[in-house]
Length: 75
Image 1: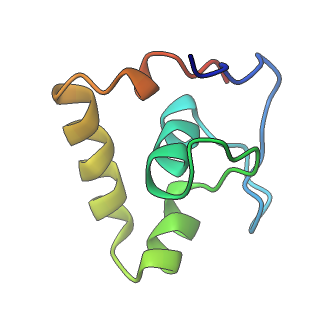
Image 2: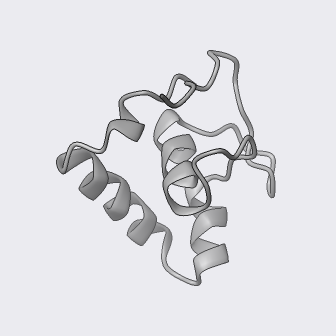
């Protein structure tokens, strides 16, 4: 079973902006489920050379298909 992220606030490792629960979950989905470093949607988009909107569309898609990673993140 995956450990949930604690309730404390997390920040983007690259730009320092506070991240949302969805951004933490998509970081785990796209980078590594075991990561403890998180990225905002903008920095993830830069890393994958896509638009920020593409990251938000992926978040929506993963939630729609019932990806449990998005239900178990507690940021």
